[in-house]
Image (tube, rainbow, N blue to C red; front, side, top):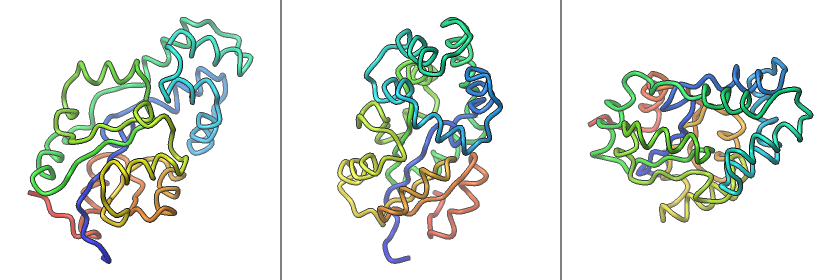
Length: 204
């Protein structure tokens, strides 16, 4: 590799935490949308963007999402489905982070929101292992906007090539690579472990 990996950066949902995101968002929108298309649909939603950049409350998000998509559903139903997105941590993820922590800076880069973030902080499982729990709310921008990766590199005070980024969304991975980060599409700890040797990343 042209640069030694110093920073491991993880998406949260679908990488560290199991989610029922596709099913629940499809339920909210009343459509069975293919996985990658639903990522794009969410990224292009003003209500979702405002919520995950920390600009509106959970109540306002539900109201605006219904109006934006002309949904025949209630705010309570939207909020219940949104709660149901977040499932348990992937088995083995805490142990994997513990093995990586002695030799690498561990960071998060997640499009998330105040509601899910509060739940995960109360759970208090993997978050204490992260040196930098960065979210879209901190940076005021969502993946795959290139600006969030520029802010990540600046915050870590490193070269893009020193970062290895893991995400379940192919558009997020592609955007990271275009700015010089090493990036891999993964779905949980087994996938993460499978690509580590490619980058010379050692488990402690």
